[in-house]
Image (cartoon, rainbow, N blue to C red; front, side, top):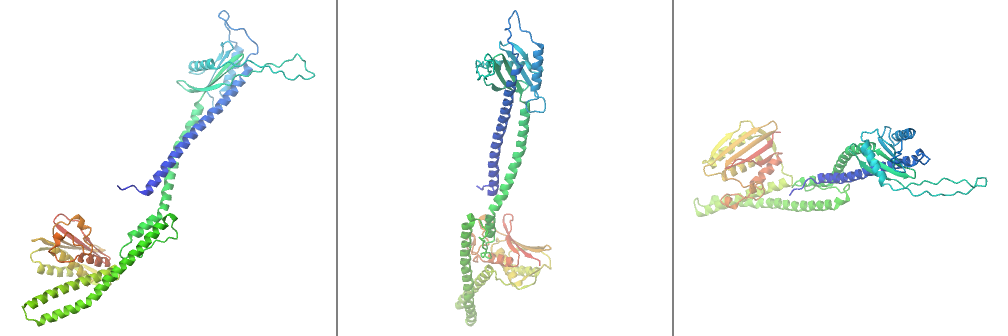
Length: 504
């Protein structure tokens, strides 16, 4: 299974890691900020609960009864109304904050309750319920101070009022969320509810900031990870580029180690050593092939000459003449193999010399056509090319390419087959295509058909002469001309090779 791009995975994993970190940090920060705002609100609420003490009447009034219910004092109510109005602007906001206030006396009689909010009844109910859950304050303690010498001994400090610390809770109504605090004094009970809409509004702003900034930060992290990983993988790309250039003519390529990261040094050293071994082995093999072909060329030439001279001296039609003729054919065939090996060794070493002249490919194709009509008169030949197809190349080598292509078209054709010769030119290239009827070439053979000494399925080629060097040599000659030779994709029952040559 092919995995996705390693660089892409690094960028995505970095973004995922940074995203989880930022989301976690944002959530923790949001809750910390929210708790800090609530704590500050609780501190302000506690301060206002303690400030409510001066508003209590210092005198003790008789408890209310059914016969004599307590009457609300208008001045006292005005005082609490003014206190409630001042609370609305005292909780860290420039706008009026909804506040509810309930004040009871020591006998649980309502001295004051808010009635200016739409949900007063529900909020007041919550405040009264909270007061019921608030414990009574401890009894006052008297702490007699040291009496100065000029002070009346009968003077006593009033008892200290230390209510229990209030408990703050968050309650929800149908319209809002409230922070409620309640405390009890010896002579009264006070409960205050502050709406959290300002806090919720601030937290919504912070949440929106996080929702915008976190994706932006993730995008920056992903882009940064992509760029950083690209720089980190630069030696891999460099190594890949060198590997792609490793051909018979690119074995001298080496990767410099001077500016390479430490993690890739060993890999590059091993690769450079491998290239050195390949270059040395290939040079030795190429040199052996060239030297062997060159050394065999002279004795084969001498042998061919001696056979030709001896063949002229024997009686015509004799058995000796027949044997000498067979030997001469094999020597010529061996000489052709030696020439091909020598050309291939020169091509591998990049030393194939070309004698470039203006070549009329139309004329060469007509000469090949005459040879086909003479060697395979049973085949139907179709042509599609015009006169004046000129290219610049080595005439003898181009003839060898065409001879190999036409030879294969004849050898691998069907009994009553056909051959098509097509050629056309563009402003920059010349295309020559040789198509012949044949059995289908297996897919496994198509990729190796240009390999040296490869002849495909032996059962198909047992009766066909050749050693598998023709197509390989033809492609090397085409590439030496800055062109190419390819096996085309065709329909079933035919084979097509296309020779491409530059016009200049």
